[in-house]
Structures are given as C-alpha cells and as structure tokens.
Length: 358
Ligand code: DNO
Image (cartoon, rainbow, N blue to C red; front, side):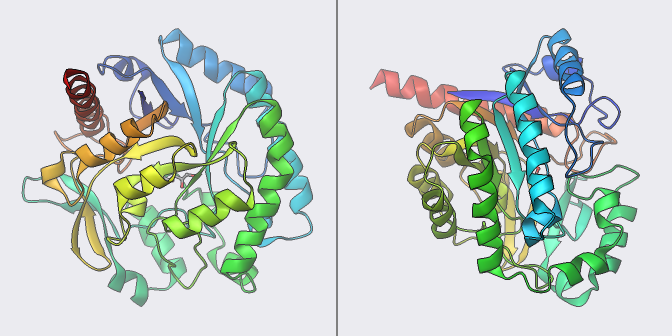
C-alpha cells in the first residue's frame, strides 16, 4: 500500500505549513529533515524529538527522513571519513531511538540534482524545473552554481546548501582521483560500516538516484540504471540496503524502463518519488504535471508496478509545477504537489478496485 506523504523542510525553511499538508486527502505524514544541520554533523536527539512532536501535533507522522546527507570525505574516501561515518551512525541511532526508520540519502559528488532552469514557463503559464545538456556542457561549474542559487528566489534548495557549495573549485579538485569504481567502493564501505546500526534499529536506507542519470561536469555518477543499482544491492546484500525509486531521476534517461525497474527491485524499494517529465530530445527535458498525458511517463504503469510488487512504504509526489501564483521553493510548492498526491492515490484506488473486481 502506498503511504502518501509530502516533503517538508521544517517551519523555518518551508512555505507550506503542516496544517495545509494535513488537509490534503490521503496524506499520512511528512518526509522531513533537519535542514540546518550541515552534512557530517550529528543530529542531536533533542532536535529529532522536537521535530517529531511538532509533526505529531499537526496530526501527521514522520514517515522518513530526506535526507541525512553524506559528507564529501566519505564519498571521496579521505582518512577523516571514519569520524564522519561515526557521526552518521550516531545520527542513525538517534533516529532509530525515536522510531524513525527510513532514511533517504544520495551519493552524488559536489552537485545533488542539477537543472538548468528553475522556472521555465510552459504554455499554460505554469513554471517548471528544466534541463538542457548543452547549457551544462558550456558553463563553468562555479558559475553554474552561482547562477542556480541566484535564481532560487532566496530559497536554500535541497542539495545546494551554501556551506557545501561555497567552494566548488576546491571540491572539484578533491574529487580529481575519484572515478566511478572508487566512488562505488566508497559507497560500499560506508554501507558496510553503518549496516550493524541500521539493522539494530531496523532502519531502511534508501539511496536516491543521480539526477540527471548520467555524469555532469565530468564528475562520476553511479546510481543511474537498473544494472548499477542491482550491483549495489548485491554488493551489500541485505534488506536495509535499498533504494528511493525516484521516477523523475531515473526517467531523465528514456532508456530506463521505469515499471520494469520497479518490478526488478522488488523487496528493495523503501521509498518512492512519483512524478512526470516531458522529454524533448536526448538531454533536454522539462518537468510536467503528474498526470500521465502531460508528460512522457505512464504514471498508471508506475503505480501499478509498485502495487504489484507489494510495495508498502512511503511515497511522495515530487517536484511540482509552480501554479496559481504560488511563491515557494522551486519544485516544492503546495498546490501542484497536492494535485499530484490525490492523482497518485486515485490511480492506486482504481488499481485495487479493478483487481478485486476480477
Ligand atoms: C531534489 C531531491 C534531491 C534528493 C536528494 C536525496 O529535489 O530529489 O535533493 O532529495 O538527492 O538525498
């Protein structure tokens, strides 16, 4: 069963109050984070408790964390990674003690998700996040970072935290000797180190795919396709090691067969991001409304595949369009994500009823 959630960045950072989220039919909880804690630092248990109390006071639950970010030393494999892994383990213990058992994270070097336009206007006047590979190929990474943050209307976007990206050049230098294989090894090392803690507290780790699903700015990117994710699942072959199935990220590459991937990952999907994209040509796409006919994906087939494998975890609509003059963090307004949530639940209802009728 799909447990519908909305991503919520905390009251200091999010334009959407919890009471609005509570009013979206079918939403059970939020996926949240301590957005102000830099990657690598321990999440104090008191802060986790406070966050939980706040969410519960709004009659919602925390159904998972997105994200506990991973310090670059762990991704690069520096000697000081041990300290950062120990901190990560303490954070997992604190989350586990508070009964929070799903953690989404990513292993992308330097940049998290990458878009070249944060407010591309569509014919209906809505705006969306968009991507054009030519722009990425022609721009210096530092300039790209500066432009992206300048166009985010003052919002700190997830994965674009200023302290991590203030020194883009140094970070590029630090990743100089990290290729796909090395990055993969470092990821496996990290997972093996946290495994006992994750298992003790029954925490499901859900790696988010690289977005877009290919290398950008010459940096390695390893979570891009079914083969690669299966390699990771067998390298640390235990149920705690699972995935965030993000339709929008895997779907940036039209060769990724989304429903097929979901079926092949049965038992290892701990969290699902369901959204739609509109493809123009290779490497050029824009985000779309969740409705299948507005974009290039078949959302019915995606929800059907999740249902068929018995997926029983948190799901969320992902990046919404900006509509109805809402001002919010790009991709994370209330209105279009609320439409997405009810649409996805509608698809699920139809699938379940259809199955019963047979
Ligand atoms: C962008 C998000 C990503 C995602 C992280 C997970 O909007 O999908 O920032 O949360 O990659 O760690």
